[in-house]
Length: 82
Image (cartoon, rainbow, N blue to C red; front, side, top):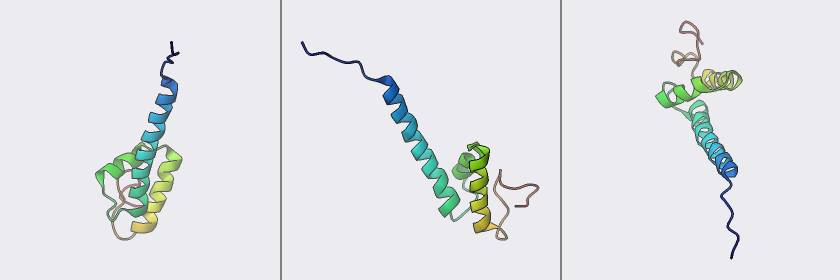
């Protein structure tokens, strides 16, 4: 009889986590680097859920593209200022 192995659930879990990180991270990067409007609801939500240092990078990228053109999106400004 052929030896049947159980699926490696740890490997499957890692693949799912890496895929989710790639999808959400890619969507976040698209928002901060290429969005034509800083008020994209999904992008704002992803940016506010990021850890502090990554959120700061995202807000800096948005600021460099939109400062002086519009108000900052939620999570990137203080009292309506960049």
